[in-house]
Length: 111
Length: 113
Image (tube, rainbow over all chains, first blue to last red; front, side, top):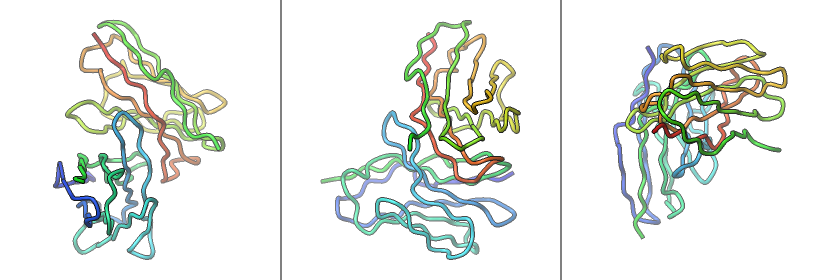
């Protein structure tokens, strides 16, 4: 069965520093991959997606992610973090129409 | 363009009661999905409806059920509520037949006392 792993439960970065959130997936074919962000008590907002083609995808809010088939990874990056980026981030893969989510990574931003 | 809407925002019930949660998809979307986000359990897929039919179901007991109406809105019903049903229930919608990009609503917070 497909699965998604986010190894980091909680990450703290300083405002202005770069960010990388890790995501590893288990999937037989080419996966459809997503990153979502959730602010406290809110729904999920789609940051970016990978279906095929260019392995570096750009998303909203200055985020990007790189699909690496050889490493089964889809890590999320941002060159300079803002205080408003503090939230929980979820990586997900589609299987049979449904989304399978990782456990989430909570991001804290230090002033 | 309006996004996915859910009602109510909060719902408080007692054990054994029934809860009904509602979702309106983005205009033009025919697929509706329900997910449960319970503390410590992460985001888990519950149900998927498209064109009025149940397309897929997660590992939840039969007391979790739902339906999709002709206008593509959807209802999630939870019967015989248990304390562990307390969670944020998220609805998402997509283009027909499992369009891969799902857009989420703000959720309904269900508390079972």
